[in-house]
Image (cartoon, rainbow, N blue to C red; front, top):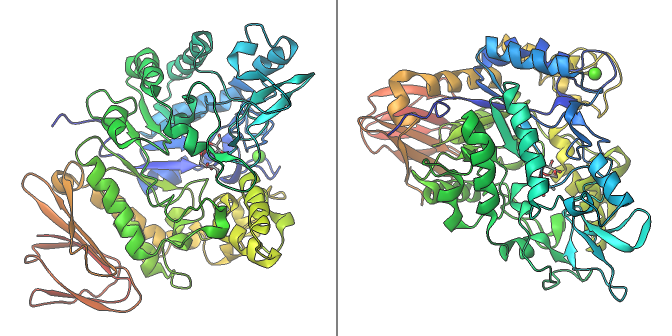
Length: 557
Ligand code: TEU
Ligand code: CA
């Protein structure tokens, strides 16, 4: 198979606002990131995705862009950005930016001009409709709650579409003039030396036409966006055009944030030959347990559920491309707090989870702080919560009959703030993130979960991640661990999560006991070479692995 340059890489996501603050204003920034590049290189990072840092009112923390060609002063300057790209290149780290083109900010000049002249060129960059007989054009529900239609400022008879926040008006991708503006911007950034893009919420750019209502799924009479997306066809026309006009000519790496994909589309999305994107994220375990009733109806993702979700994606994708594997990102709670049963998130369990996802077939992504085993942050009052999605879900939970305490517990469990508390660098004030007042409080556990303490501890979660990265990058095992296939082993065994990585001439077994109680597991073949374990003692007796609680081993057979 043709070797693809990024297949043996390791990727990392930074949420700039919470990573490292260089000037004491409590907000992470580009100079702060540059100052920490050596730490990322030491971890073994090759690709670095930054969540948005463009000019923005931060209504959705930067996913509401008011100027695609400028860096928001709170994060730094374009010179800082150019320096980051250059310093990254020196260290062999490619910089990936966030491409947010399903919508822009209502403070973007395009939208301001649309308000001045809804029938003019810029009015056609958006979905602006007349209110007929006092009824909104459709009954779709925004991802952040409420109707997707908002009065167009200055026009009582007109509304505009926003599938996310009302400060995020959707861009009309049916309009070729809008698409030309988007492609021009993408190419401008790629010409500056970016390695590529993570592509935000991209499945939403193709709406089912004509706009109609869908069956209400709650007593607010609204219908979740997924119901409309299910009827939307033809997104490939836009994605193929964007690839051909922008990504392919620059040989750019792209990874799609794709929810609600249609299974038959996957070969077109990330097929090795000419997919619309280089890769896309596996969100199967991320969306497990979601309910039409919001967080009030959500189900926990237990080890057996996690295993089933991960293996289902591996089976679905197979050799049809190279999926991107995560346990968390800036939109999700911390992985170790979500996929390890409550109260059992020991270092051993965190290392087991790390091993299980990191050695899957695909590109592994580490989200900032995940390499330290950072955990969810307790919430004692709704006034502490920043995340607009969590604030909406709190209201939905109350409306569903939950008490304030129950609704707050759900926020603590699922809020995106869990991933957005400042990076825990050391045990000094504010975990070394800032000398000022952090924009979001630091998790109080920074005193014992922090990078400085772990860097000096050979048994720390951080030291273990470094071993995982080194193993995955060891050319001796690339045959199995990079291009090899994945075959589940004993999938029916409760709380055993095990799989083969099978190359042309090499087989590696990943064998994990995903529970706190010990259990014996028969080995499929003699162990030729024990490559890694998360516990110091590995007991293999006559073809049986006697695994302790949350013990995992990686062995060449
Ligand atoms: O998220 C897209 C998205 O649909 C899901 O992440 C989810 O619906 C959302 O996080 C609400 O919980 C992307 C970005 O990752 C997210 O941070 C932005 O809020 C969103 O798009 C809008 O740009
Ligand atoms: Ca700052």
